[in-house]
Length: 324
Image (tube, rainbow, N blue to C red):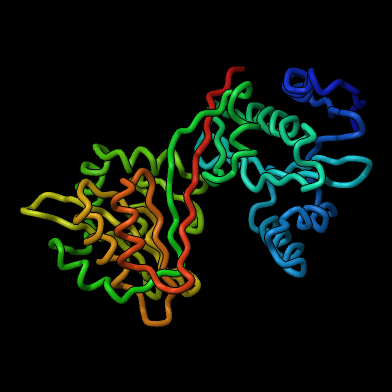
């Protein structure tokens, strides 16, 4: 292991970026930042405190098995107090995801110092921009990443879960709704829409439908390509031959998820969502995610698809351009 160096909190941002770039492990008042190893997984799992205790380690091991690269930890006195994964969904574009700090250490300054460290890893990996998702209500993260660290809001997106499908067919009658395989036409319309820019800004992993996804030609063609046993596609809502709404959907593990919904009118958005949700089978769970959608459309989606247990989660995407 490289020699450790002790620095003061007031100098950590500059020290981490400069020293870690040259492969030096930073030691801050007995706090060490380093790459994670498989033996760390049980302690890393304990940081996900919103999950039942019996699920934490298993879920952490599952995440690591699927995507084992880019994981880092913060360690104090031999105990892991933070973790984060740096991923690259596109060349030059890094995301900080699954960032967690042990509750007892929050507010100590470790979280900010750790974010500086993982940002340095993103820069070493060739990142020109770095981003992270956080819920709108998470003021602690907003305060930590904004201000002196220079992160600003790049996009907003909303996820609605536990939805009803009962009004899907009636909503689809608001406009002429059809499933299309014309990716070029859809992309030409999308590129002029605010929701398309927001969806692109909010992408964390293009191949993981559980996360936000970008509306690009490769994804469109993939969803439009019919394969035996796969349920996925692109629904458009039109008025007088002009597109007013696009909804991408896919079904995985018993959940139909509208991966992204983009609309130029409220009626077009409701119709496109209705057309996609109407593909759900009686036992499918239903969820919708939309980036950059107008609040009026989101409220209507909630009202039309709500049932007991439905939830709404609003997210910011914080981003920053890096300088070498």
